[in-house]
Amino acid sequence: MTNKEFLEKISQKTRLEMGEAKELSSLLIGTVLEEIADGNSVTIQGFGSFEPREKASRRIYNPTSKAYMVVPSKTTLNYKMSGALKTQLNKE
Amino acid sequence: MNEKLSFQNIADALARKAGVQKKVAETFSKAFFDTIVEAVSAGDVVKIKGLGTFKLIEVGDRESVNVSTGMRFVIPGYKKLSFTAEDHVVEVLNPQTKNEEEVTLAEDAHTESVVVAESAKVAEPVMVAEPIKTEAPIEMEEPKEEEDIETLIQVPEPERVETPQDAFAGIDMLISTPESVDDIRQQYEAAKAKMETAVEEARKANAEKVRLEKLLERLEKNVEPEVVPHTEKTEKEVSVETVKDTNPVSAIPVTPANEKADPSVETFEEEKRQAAFNRVMTEPSHSQEEKPQSKPSSNKRFWLTVLIILLLAVLGVFIYLIHRNIEAVEKVHTVEQTTKPAKKDKSVQPAKSTKPVVPKADKDSLVKAQKADSVKVAPEPQKEASKPDAQKPEVQKPAKEERPKTHRMQRGESLTRVSQKYYGTKDSVRAILRINTFADPNNIPVGAVVKLP
Image 1 (cartoon, chains in turn red, blue):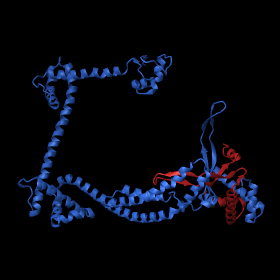
Image 2 (cartoon, one colour; image 1 turned 90 degrees about the vertical axis):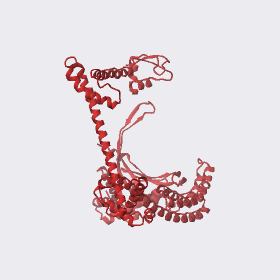
Image 3 (tube, chains in turn blue, green; image 1 turned 180 degrees about the vertical axis):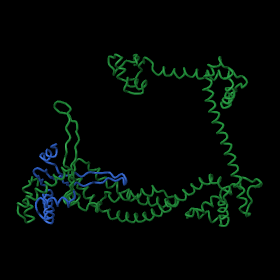
Image 4 (cartoon, chains in turn orange, brown; image 1 turned 60 degrees about the vertical axis):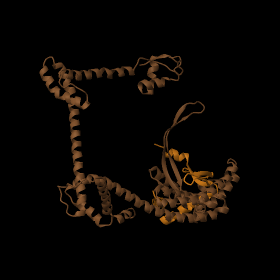
């Protein structure tokens, strides 16, 4: 499902126009990402939780240039589905 | 920091940002996540711009062990909603290292010092020594590789040309101290530019060389078989003549440079062959088959015809020999087959069986280059007949030897090895264990006799 199809479905459900849905969608994502960037975790009941994960810096070896390089530490977005969703998806 | 936000918090924040009612924000947010779940449970992959991809993943059954009881049990498989964040998200979450790849050298140096300060696990001397080690080879490598390329242009090899490029690509990512970064970068840029031109030149030269070699190979292969059908055709002679017209000396150096023209190479090759022939064979001419049309071409035509005749003669002899061999072999087989019934029939019908055997036995003796008495008819088939009889017990004997009833254990031998030895597989160990009684199958005394199933 592409972004467009996704937004169409939402607009049908909420009786919002596509433009509005698009705007709200990007705002929602922006809000979630802001909180994640602040180090907070966001839990959506019945869906799952988004939380920042620290990836430690590590040294890697490039075999072509025979050089050691440092991959700096970074934060990634981790998602874990909720228990309710798990039971819902594995109903059958 | 480290707050746990709920759906409500997010909906409120969204309402504030978008300037819409809380209710609208709530319903929208709810619809947002519900739609994801719906689409995913329908087996779809949901790509949301600015966030990432949601998709359903099947987790297979796996076995685990109950720690307290030590019992094995199976954790059943299940479906899992997996999420992969977009690159954009990672960029947003890591604003300080956004442009990292562009500034790898400086950035790496910076992060490295940070690492030294932060990580207690990594030994400090190693990290400090790292830039020194890597920095030295950079400056050393560059001239070396340039020299390599210069030599490579003369004798180009594609693999070697490409490797230095890779090495240079890696230098971009090398760790070094900030002071020397600019110097190295400049050197690197200059070297890279030089190298690129050199590599291109080398590639061109190499491509041409390869093409030339292929052409020559093809020609060499073609020349010999082509000669035979050219007895009637005069095309080859014509091409040879053209070589005579064009200066052969100029043709030779030209070929390595621009060997695009097939005919020139072909004729050149012809020329070489002809010259070799002229040198080797200095027999007087007695060409009667074909009359020379022009004086320069007559010599070549003569040698060509001689070569063809020779080839044909050799071919004829070859075919004849092969044919005879096959016939002889076939007859040997028939002899062996006929001799068996002959032995039985001999007492009843000696005249019938012996007569056909005589010539065949002769052939057999010829092939094997044995001194066989062709006059004595009767003993010959008897010998032949006795041969298969003698062979049969020989074949049966080793089969019996392969499976003796017992085996005496030797030092360092295990039942597995015994099984492997006699049955070719380790799986027969159980069969051996079944018919034997050991105090300890894993520790059998040396010299113990093991019964074999």
